[in-house]
Length: 308
Ligand SMILES: Cc1ncc(COP(=O)(O)O)c(C=O)c1O
Image: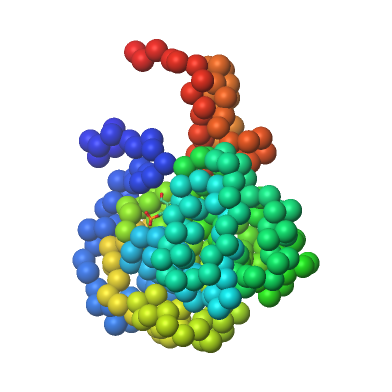
Protein backbone atom coordinates (compact mmCIF):
# COMPACT_ATOMS: atom_id res chain seq x y z
CA UNK A 1 0.00 0.00 0.00
CA UNK A 2 2.32 2.75 -1.25
CA UNK A 3 0.76 6.26 -1.15
CA UNK A 4 -2.27 4.70 0.62
CA UNK A 5 -3.43 3.49 -2.79
CA UNK A 6 -3.83 -0.20 -3.57
CA UNK A 7 -1.18 -1.62 -5.93
CA UNK A 8 -2.68 -2.32 -9.35
CA UNK A 9 -2.27 -5.86 -10.72
CA UNK A 10 -4.01 -5.29 -14.06
CA UNK A 11 -2.45 -5.22 -17.55
CA UNK A 12 -2.61 -1.43 -17.54
CA UNK A 13 -2.64 1.18 -16.29
CA UNK A 14 0.06 -0.32 -14.10
CA UNK A 15 1.23 0.76 -10.69
CA UNK A 16 3.01 4.14 -10.66
CA UNK A 17 5.57 4.48 -7.86
CA UNK A 18 5.52 7.40 -5.45
CA UNK A 19 8.86 8.77 -6.69
CA UNK A 20 7.49 8.94 -10.24
CA UNK A 21 4.15 10.45 -9.21
CA UNK A 22 6.00 13.17 -7.30
CA UNK A 23 7.73 14.26 -10.53
CA UNK A 24 4.28 15.13 -11.92
CA UNK A 25 4.10 17.97 -9.35
CA UNK A 26 7.18 19.73 -10.79
CA UNK A 27 6.40 23.34 -11.74
CA UNK A 28 5.46 23.88 -15.38
CA UNK A 29 7.99 25.23 -17.87
CA UNK A 30 7.29 26.89 -21.21
CA UNK A 31 7.12 24.56 -24.21
CA UNK A 32 9.27 26.87 -26.38
CA UNK A 33 12.12 27.33 -23.91
CA UNK A 34 15.70 26.01 -23.70
CA UNK A 35 14.61 24.12 -20.56
CA UNK A 36 12.04 22.01 -22.41
CA UNK A 37 14.55 21.29 -25.18
CA UNK A 38 17.03 20.07 -22.59
CA UNK A 39 14.32 17.84 -21.08
CA UNK A 40 13.23 16.47 -24.48
CA UNK A 41 16.88 15.92 -25.44
CA UNK A 42 17.47 13.85 -22.30
CA UNK A 43 14.30 11.80 -22.79
CA UNK A 44 14.76 11.06 -26.50
CA UNK A 45 18.40 10.10 -25.91
CA UNK A 46 17.32 7.77 -23.08
CA UNK A 47 14.57 6.14 -25.17
CA UNK A 48 17.03 5.56 -28.02
CA UNK A 49 19.26 3.64 -25.59
CA UNK A 50 16.33 1.59 -24.27
CA UNK A 51 15.22 0.71 -27.82
CA UNK A 52 18.77 0.22 -29.18
CA UNK A 53 18.10 2.64 -32.01
CA UNK A 54 19.39 5.68 -33.85
CA UNK A 55 15.90 6.31 -35.25
CA UNK A 56 14.00 9.51 -34.48
CA UNK A 57 11.91 9.51 -31.28
CA UNK A 58 8.63 11.41 -31.05
CA UNK A 59 6.95 12.23 -27.74
CA UNK A 60 3.20 12.39 -28.08
CA UNK A 61 0.64 13.79 -25.66
CA UNK A 62 -2.20 11.37 -26.29
CA UNK A 63 -3.03 7.67 -26.16
CA UNK A 64 -1.25 5.10 -28.36
CA UNK A 65 -4.40 4.59 -30.43
CA UNK A 66 -3.53 7.87 -32.20
CA UNK A 67 -0.15 6.40 -33.13
CA UNK A 68 -1.85 3.54 -34.97
CA UNK A 69 -3.21 6.21 -37.29
CA UNK A 70 0.07 8.14 -37.44
CA UNK A 71 1.80 4.92 -38.51
CA UNK A 72 -0.58 3.86 -41.25
CA UNK A 73 -1.56 7.29 -42.61
CA UNK A 74 2.08 8.32 -43.04
CA UNK A 75 3.26 5.14 -44.77
CA UNK A 76 0.63 3.46 -46.93
CA UNK A 77 0.00 4.34 -50.57
CA UNK A 78 -1.00 0.85 -51.69
CA UNK A 79 -2.31 -1.18 -48.77
CA UNK A 80 -1.71 -2.20 -45.15
CA UNK A 81 -1.51 -5.86 -44.21
CA UNK A 82 -2.71 -6.32 -40.60
CA UNK A 83 -2.23 -9.42 -38.47
CA UNK A 84 -5.26 -9.81 -36.22
CA UNK A 85 -4.87 -12.11 -33.21
CA UNK A 86 -6.73 -10.32 -30.44
CA UNK A 87 -8.70 -7.22 -29.45
CA UNK A 88 -6.01 -4.59 -30.03
CA UNK A 89 -4.72 -5.85 -33.36
CA UNK A 90 -8.36 -6.06 -34.46
CA UNK A 91 -9.00 -2.43 -33.46
CA UNK A 92 -5.86 -1.29 -35.27
CA UNK A 93 -7.12 -2.90 -38.48
CA UNK A 94 -10.47 -1.19 -37.93
CA UNK A 95 -8.75 2.18 -37.49
CA UNK A 96 -6.90 1.73 -40.82
CA UNK A 97 -10.19 0.87 -42.47
CA UNK A 98 -11.85 3.97 -41.00
CA UNK A 99 -8.92 6.04 -42.34
CA UNK A 100 -9.94 4.88 -45.80
CA UNK A 101 -6.81 2.79 -46.41
CA UNK A 102 -6.76 -0.49 -48.33
CA UNK A 103 -6.64 -3.09 -45.60
CA UNK A 104 -5.71 -6.77 -45.78
CA UNK A 105 -6.16 -9.12 -42.83
CA UNK A 106 -4.46 -12.25 -41.61
CA UNK A 107 -7.03 -13.44 -39.12
CA UNK A 108 -5.91 -15.76 -36.31
CA UNK A 109 -7.80 -17.61 -33.67
CA UNK A 110 -7.24 -15.73 -30.39
CA UNK A 111 -4.31 -17.16 -28.45
CA UNK A 112 -2.17 -17.71 -31.53
CA UNK A 113 0.95 -15.77 -32.48
CA UNK A 114 1.75 -14.20 -35.85
CA UNK A 115 3.19 -16.86 -38.18
CA UNK A 116 5.99 -15.88 -40.53
CA UNK A 117 4.79 -18.22 -43.30
CA UNK A 118 1.38 -16.48 -43.36
CA UNK A 119 3.01 -13.05 -43.57
CA UNK A 120 5.13 -14.32 -46.47
CA UNK A 121 2.08 -15.72 -48.28
CA UNK A 122 0.07 -12.49 -48.00
CA UNK A 123 2.95 -10.12 -48.80
CA UNK A 124 3.84 -12.18 -51.88
CA UNK A 125 0.57 -10.98 -53.48
CA UNK A 126 2.22 -7.57 -53.95
CA UNK A 127 -0.95 -5.83 -52.70
CA UNK A 128 0.72 -4.11 -49.74
CA UNK A 129 3.43 -1.57 -49.00
CA UNK A 130 2.96 -1.67 -45.20
CA UNK A 131 2.85 -4.52 -42.66
CA UNK A 132 1.32 -3.87 -39.21
CA UNK A 133 1.37 -6.18 -36.20
CA UNK A 134 1.00 -6.10 -32.44
CA UNK A 135 4.11 -7.47 -30.72
CA UNK A 136 2.37 -8.29 -27.45
CA UNK A 137 -1.40 -8.83 -27.71
CA UNK A 138 -2.49 -7.65 -24.29
CA UNK A 139 -5.95 -9.21 -24.67
CA UNK A 140 -4.59 -12.76 -25.02
CA UNK A 141 -1.13 -12.64 -23.43
CA UNK A 142 0.45 -13.59 -26.76
CA UNK A 143 3.89 -12.36 -27.77
CA UNK A 144 4.86 -12.84 -31.40
CA UNK A 145 8.38 -13.51 -32.65
CA UNK A 146 9.86 -10.32 -34.11
CA UNK A 147 13.16 -11.94 -35.14
CA UNK A 148 11.47 -14.33 -37.60
CA UNK A 149 9.42 -11.55 -39.17
CA UNK A 150 12.50 -9.34 -39.39
CA UNK A 151 14.43 -12.04 -41.28
CA UNK A 152 11.55 -12.48 -43.72
CA UNK A 153 11.17 -8.77 -44.40
CA UNK A 154 14.91 -8.18 -44.80
CA UNK A 155 15.39 -11.13 -47.14
CA UNK A 156 12.23 -10.98 -49.29
CA UNK A 157 10.39 -7.68 -48.76
CA UNK A 158 12.96 -4.93 -48.05
CA UNK A 159 10.64 -2.17 -49.32
CA UNK A 160 7.77 -2.99 -46.97
CA UNK A 161 7.36 -0.47 -44.14
CA UNK A 162 7.08 -2.39 -40.85
CA UNK A 163 4.86 -1.00 -38.07
CA UNK A 164 4.86 -2.61 -34.62
CA UNK A 165 2.59 -1.90 -31.66
CA UNK A 166 4.61 -2.56 -28.51
CA UNK A 167 2.19 -0.96 -26.06
CA UNK A 168 2.46 -3.76 -23.52
CA UNK A 169 6.06 -4.83 -24.21
CA UNK A 170 8.17 -1.68 -24.73
CA UNK A 171 10.45 -0.98 -21.76
CA UNK A 172 9.70 -4.43 -20.31
CA UNK A 173 11.14 -6.62 -23.06
CA UNK A 174 14.30 -6.15 -25.11
CA UNK A 175 13.37 -4.86 -28.59
CA UNK A 176 16.45 -4.09 -30.65
CA UNK A 177 14.83 -1.72 -33.15
CA UNK A 178 17.84 -1.18 -35.43
CA UNK A 179 18.87 -4.82 -35.59
CA UNK A 180 15.28 -5.87 -36.34
CA UNK A 181 14.73 -3.03 -38.81
CA UNK A 182 11.41 -1.83 -37.37
CA UNK A 183 10.29 1.36 -39.13
CA UNK A 184 7.71 2.48 -36.62
CA UNK A 185 7.53 1.18 -33.04
CA UNK A 186 4.85 2.63 -30.79
CA UNK A 187 3.78 2.50 -27.17
CA UNK A 188 1.83 4.45 -24.61
CA UNK A 189 3.29 4.97 -21.15
CA UNK A 190 0.76 3.30 -18.84
CA UNK A 191 2.19 -0.21 -19.03
CA UNK A 192 5.87 -1.26 -18.69
CA UNK A 193 6.99 2.38 -18.60
CA UNK A 194 5.12 2.66 -15.28
CA UNK A 195 3.62 6.10 -15.90
CA UNK A 196 0.03 7.35 -15.96
CA UNK A 197 -1.90 7.01 -19.23
CA UNK A 198 -2.30 9.77 -21.82
CA UNK A 199 1.21 9.91 -23.25
CA UNK A 200 2.96 7.89 -25.97
CA UNK A 201 6.32 7.42 -27.61
CA UNK A 202 7.39 6.08 -30.98
CA UNK A 203 10.57 5.49 -32.95
CA UNK A 204 10.50 6.35 -36.64
CA UNK A 205 13.01 5.27 -39.28
CA UNK A 206 14.50 7.70 -41.82
CA UNK A 207 12.86 5.88 -44.71
CA UNK A 208 9.46 6.18 -43.02
CA UNK A 209 10.02 9.93 -42.66
CA UNK A 210 10.90 10.05 -46.38
CA UNK A 211 7.82 7.99 -47.28
CA UNK A 212 5.60 10.32 -45.28
CA UNK A 213 6.75 13.24 -47.46
CA UNK A 214 5.22 11.55 -50.52
CA UNK A 215 1.82 11.00 -48.92
CA UNK A 216 -1.10 13.38 -49.40
CA UNK A 217 -4.16 13.86 -47.21
CA UNK A 218 -2.65 12.72 -43.92
CA UNK A 219 -4.01 15.69 -41.97
CA UNK A 220 -1.90 17.94 -39.73
CA UNK A 221 -2.16 16.60 -36.17
CA UNK A 222 -0.54 13.22 -36.90
CA UNK A 223 1.73 14.29 -39.75
CA UNK A 224 5.22 12.82 -39.27
CA UNK A 225 6.72 15.68 -41.28
CA UNK A 226 5.34 18.20 -38.77
CA UNK A 227 6.59 16.17 -35.77
CA UNK A 228 9.97 15.79 -37.42
CA UNK A 229 10.31 19.52 -38.03
CA UNK A 230 9.72 20.24 -34.33
CA UNK A 231 11.76 17.38 -32.85
CA UNK A 232 14.78 18.70 -34.76
CA UNK A 233 14.45 21.76 -32.46
CA UNK A 234 13.83 19.39 -29.49
CA UNK A 235 10.24 20.60 -29.30
CA UNK A 236 6.77 19.21 -30.01
CA UNK A 237 4.31 20.70 -32.54
CA UNK A 238 1.63 21.33 -29.89
CA UNK A 239 1.76 22.08 -26.15
CA UNK A 240 2.81 18.76 -24.62
CA UNK A 241 1.91 17.12 -21.33
CA UNK A 242 4.93 18.50 -19.49
CA UNK A 243 4.19 16.56 -16.25
CA UNK A 244 4.50 13.30 -18.25
CA UNK A 245 7.87 14.48 -19.51
CA UNK A 246 9.15 15.06 -15.97
CA UNK A 247 7.84 11.60 -15.06
CA UNK A 248 9.44 9.99 -18.12
CA UNK A 249 12.80 11.58 -17.32
CA UNK A 250 12.68 10.00 -13.86
CA UNK A 251 11.61 6.60 -15.25
CA UNK A 252 14.59 6.67 -17.64
CA UNK A 253 16.90 7.39 -14.71
CA UNK A 254 15.37 4.50 -12.76
CA UNK A 255 15.79 2.17 -15.78
CA UNK A 256 19.42 3.25 -16.21
CA UNK A 257 20.09 2.60 -12.51
CA UNK A 258 18.60 -0.87 -12.79
CA UNK A 259 20.52 -1.64 -16.00
CA UNK A 260 18.83 -2.76 -19.23
CA UNK A 261 19.81 -6.43 -19.04
CA UNK A 262 18.74 -6.63 -15.40
CA UNK A 263 15.39 -5.11 -16.38
CA UNK A 264 14.77 -7.57 -19.23
CA UNK A 265 15.83 -10.51 -17.03
CA UNK A 266 13.61 -9.36 -14.16
CA UNK A 267 10.58 -9.45 -16.46
CA UNK A 268 11.52 -12.93 -17.70
CA UNK A 269 11.88 -14.14 -14.10
CA UNK A 270 8.52 -12.61 -13.11
CA UNK A 271 6.82 -14.24 -16.12
CA UNK A 272 8.30 -17.63 -15.18
CA UNK A 273 7.22 -17.16 -11.57
CA UNK A 274 3.63 -16.32 -12.58
CA UNK A 275 3.38 -19.22 -15.02
CA UNK A 276 4.68 -21.65 -12.35
CA UNK A 277 2.06 -20.33 -9.97
CA UNK A 278 -0.63 -21.07 -12.55
CA UNK A 279 0.66 -24.58 -13.31
CA UNK A 280 1.01 -25.37 -9.59
CA UNK A 281 -2.66 -24.46 -9.19
CA UNK A 282 -3.81 -26.83 -11.93
CA UNK A 283 -4.27 -24.10 -14.52
CA UNK A 284 -3.21 -23.80 -18.15
CA UNK A 285 -2.04 -20.77 -20.09
CA UNK A 286 -4.22 -19.19 -22.77
CA UNK A 287 -1.52 -18.48 -25.43
CA UNK A 288 -0.18 -21.25 -27.59
CA UNK A 289 3.20 -22.65 -26.57
CA UNK A 290 6.27 -20.53 -27.40
CA UNK A 291 4.15 -17.41 -27.77
CA UNK A 292 3.65 -16.63 -24.08
CA UNK A 293 4.07 -12.97 -23.20
CA UNK A 294 6.92 -11.91 -20.90
CA UNK A 295 5.06 -8.94 -19.45
CA UNK A 296 1.61 -10.36 -18.71
CA UNK A 297 0.27 -13.84 -18.16
CA UNK A 298 -3.15 -14.96 -19.41
CA UNK A 299 -4.43 -18.03 -17.57
CA UNK A 300 -7.16 -20.26 -19.01
CA UNK A 301 -8.97 -20.59 -15.68
CA UNK A 302 -9.90 -24.23 -16.27
CA UNK A 303 -9.93 -25.04 -12.58
CA UNK A 304 -12.35 -23.16 -10.33
CA UNK A 305 -10.42 -21.80 -7.39
CA UNK A 306 -11.99 -20.87 -4.09
CA UNK A 307 -11.73 -17.25 -2.97
CA UNK A 308 -10.72 -16.71 0.59
C1 LIG B 1 -1.51 -3.84 -27.37
C2 LIG B 1 -2.23 -2.56 -27.17
N1 LIG B 1 -2.31 -1.69 -28.19
C3 LIG B 1 -2.94 -0.50 -28.06
C4 LIG B 1 -3.54 -0.15 -26.88
C5 LIG B 1 -4.25 1.18 -26.79
O1 LIG B 1 -3.46 2.03 -26.02
P1 LIG B 1 -4.04 3.46 -25.57
O2 LIG B 1 -5.13 3.16 -24.61
O3 LIG B 1 -2.87 4.15 -24.98
O4 LIG B 1 -4.56 4.10 -26.81
C6 LIG B 1 -3.51 -1.02 -25.79
C7 LIG B 1 -4.16 -0.66 -24.52
O5 LIG B 1 -4.25 -1.41 -23.59
C8 LIG B 1 -2.84 -2.26 -25.94
O6 LIG B 1 -2.76 -3.12 -24.92
